[in-house]
Image 1 (cartoon, rainbow, N blue to C red):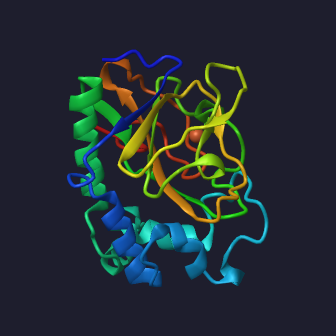
Image 2: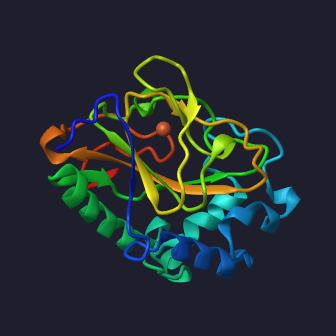
Length: 235
Ligand SMILES: [Fe+2]
C-alpha cells in the first residue's frame, strides 16, 4: 500500500460508477423539495436551523441531519423506521466505493466504518464543532480518513487541515464533486464559519488496512459504538 504518513491526497473517482450526487439530490428532492444540496439552507425553515454556532456534540444533531440521515434504511434504528425510508442504494454504492479504494489505492482489504458520517456546512456556521484529530475522540491511531464532498468544497466551505503533524498551519483543502480526499488521521483538521453563501454537503469515513488493524476498547462519542469489526467497523 501507499505510505500515508503526513499525507493529504486528492484523487478522482468515476461519478457515473458512484453517483453520490444523484443519490443525495434525489433524497433531498423527495424529502424537502430541494433539488440541489448546495441550496439545502433555503429549504429548511429558519426555526429548524441552528440559531448559534454548532459545538462538538451538536454538529450531528440538527433537524437537517435528521433529514439527511434518512438517505438509507441502514441508518435507521429499528425495522419500523427502516420500512419508512426509501432505499436509494447509498450504502450499497458506498460499499462498492470501498472495494474501489481497496483495488485502486490500498491494494489490500480494508476494515471500514460501517456507516459513513454525513456533514452539512450551513452558511454562517460550522459543520464540525472544533479543530481536532479523530484520536482525540478515542479513534484508533491506525485509522486513515476519507472525505467525499457532494457539493463543491472551497475556501470557508471545506475542510481545513494542517500541512504536517502539529504544524497548526490550517488551510482549506479544495475539492470538486467527483474528487475525494485521503488524509493521515494524525493531521489536525476542522473548519471555519462558512461565508461562501451555499451549503456544503459531504460524507466521511475511516478505514484501517486489514494488515494494520488491532482490536480496540475505545468507543465513539456520537454513537457510543466500540471501534471493533461488527460494531463501528465492517470488513
Ligand atoms: Fe475528524
